Picture 1: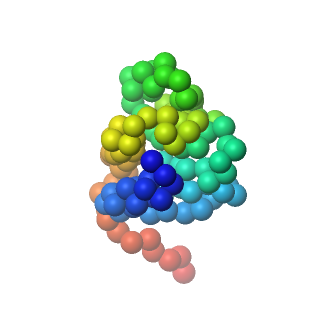
Picture 2: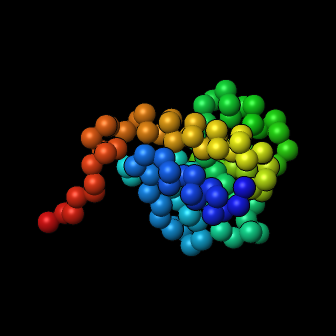
Length: 119
């Protein structure tokens, strides 16, 4: 998958937003919580990071081209070294699973409500 395909897929999920953070990292969020990041720097050691269940994380760590994501690997975030480390269909499933894990932890009100400005 290419960055633009990943971007389109992430933004197709209900309530998903994107933000460029940490230099060249495209962050996808539900509410204020991350569910996926894509490093736009092609020389980065981890191009895409996403949240997994502990079981899925353990399985992914057995595969070539996948490692614990820097800083958040201990929280079961997997890091793909290349965007083609897994097939497109599986990548969509992993992104959706990450979205589902993260969105389950935020309230329904936050998921649907637009962000309010502080006065």
